Length: 214
Image (cartoon, rainbow, N blue to C red; front, side, top):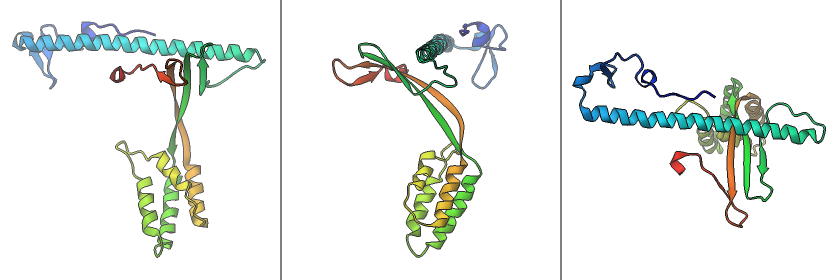
């Protein structure tokens, strides 16, 4: 993997010699920029450059580890005359003494197609039909389930929560079938987590690779 090299060109792209670009995008002659602003700018760029190199190293480390683990799965499969194909996820690799383990998890991104709106229409009809009974409570639950987040996405968990309601109504069951049919796997994300045993206990702690947790 190619690492990021900190150069004048990628620190301040398209900035002529003798100038600095301010936050508004304007070119300012060097002699008009206070020394303290220059020192701060240099410090921030130095730290960011080091952070980008570390990010590249971590990405290269993950790529190497994932490659090694995939190769090990293939090696293990060969012992049973099996050739593995596709994604190799949701697997745990432990050291012989049980002190360390590496867990690979593959999570799927679930989205909904247009049939979710059909389900919503069927649910609305159910609520209207039940208006004399518990319609208000169900309406609040449904409106919460179909709320979108800041990115305009609907919570998969909240919508699926509706399917767990025990409602014996043919129209409601049709709506729940539409919910299930509308679900689509739009992608996957692979997570690698490294753990070590806490003393001689049965508990493990994750080795954090997150700055905020160090």
